[in-house]
Image (cartoon, rainbow, N blue to C red; front, top):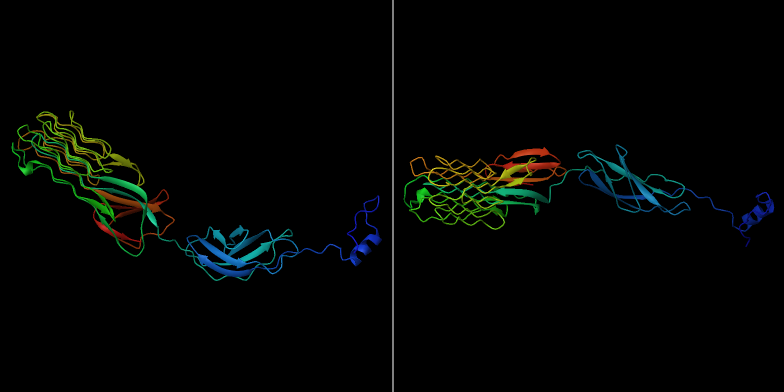
Length: 385
């Protein structure tokens, strides 16, 4: 067989004899063309995208295939890849598309395949959400009383949710402040615990009620999400692990501060424990501050940051929907009653590229901001994806 000719003259030209020998010997270079069209497979729509399958063309045109291009109709959006399947992004949800595929080799792209089936991209429901669940704060104690503990504070991301079934949302109310300021162990002189808040399987515990501060009554704070303050040298209630902190020990003849989400209640001064900030709603808000307690028989301390009520005549209520504890009543007169604990709140959010919930109850506030879809409940309800 003749060999492929090389340059054989001083001028770098082939002689006619060389060309003749190459052609006769079957060594003349073959013509390279673009590949033939691939065979289209199936297109499957997603959220602003589609996945397109295909099989390789029957001919590579004499040169190895180096890649494939998918093109949408309408809009002419393209995506490339080295093999099937190829995901094409940047599509508009609610618009119907078909797709073609072309193969590429060293010469270029070959002809387009036949069109695929029609698909309409659509947003999908989220598989997980971020949540904030704050329980109702505890009520403040009376008779030189202690501050109520903040409601339990729980937050996390990546909480799995499913579609088709309603998810329960419970927003806990605040505990009642003391309704008696007498020198007795009358239960009405104690603050009552706040109520739990719930999202699905996540439960935050209501804040503990504040104690009586008068020295004639032995009174510890109540346990809760955060503990209520104790009275007259006695300890505050315990907080729930992962949700809050302990109430403060009562000073002599006074009541300690209620515990907050990020700090114990104070003892002297009997300030409420500070709460914890969260930006889940789209702006930074501090929740779950403890109520302030009575420093002694005549002065009161401030509540913690995060909605804790100040001690006073009567004690101040916690700020609504923060889970703050109520303030204690600072003396034993009929005005020395405890403040009510604040109601809680439940907030969830997820990326706004996912679809909105199919239904909600409880009239949540719904906002879309900062790349998130946000649902905020201030009363109990539900959500279904």
